Length: 381
Image (cartoon, rainbow, N blue to C red; front, side, top):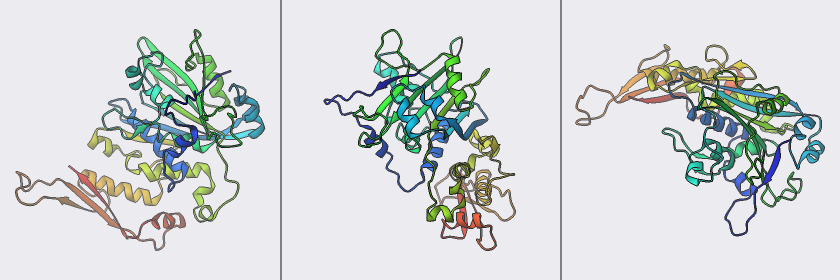
């Protein structure tokens, strides 16, 4: 069983409680699935190993036995089983070709801990990203994970260390202490972690025993990383099911199915990089290989028509030449004296006229977000 550590509630500290943390994202305009997908894919891209051509991400939506999982969490087992009986839904996000959650977690040195990606993702809120090209802050976006289900998130990672590899697993919960139905009834901050205590330490540490890790992952029918693989897997159990369709879900068909909703969110936010090798050739950064329940999202097979159009326009601007006959590409040039070579362009603009007439219902809904009939992308040289 994983041992619990409740976050202390020191009246002299300025520590936030769970309610404040869950409000910190302050984004009520986007569906929570979109926020989760955007956050997890950006984290994976930021953690991609230098020189890798692709960042591989797998979203899994499935069922698990609540009793089997709850028996691993000290202090909340009975409440979980009572509140969430039988088979329950989970979402996991697993990446490969990434570094995993590296960094020290044993030291008491604050400066060293502040550089640990493991420490910042599992325990930190609002720590700035320090890697070149990485955006945002550790912890703010991850609140979307805790808002999807019962507030519990499991982190599993495999990293390369001197002489081999190390695997780590730890769980966390963030919930509002004002919630009458909360799991942590005696926790005034609504924050806790589950891991292991070693050598009489007051710090909760990740599980590193691979057999114990494998036992927990097997509850979700997930596998450990193998051979030279490194990466991170986030598991969010007890996903809330929509009890009844609202008007928006009736109008938008993919909101009625969790797998379809994840698939659409991936395309909506990352269509330029999905299986787009031109992106890698031009920028030197990885393209995205994404699977949802073992099914690849591929531009030539199942990318939604509107996002296929977007990607083609984007790639045309990127390359400076049209890859499809209806796309128009024009160079962008500055005025006199702006450049030493007046004939040199600073980038390209690509555009295409589109119409909603005669389009499938799904494409019509997607296009309805826009009031114009042309789509344009600009590329910088």
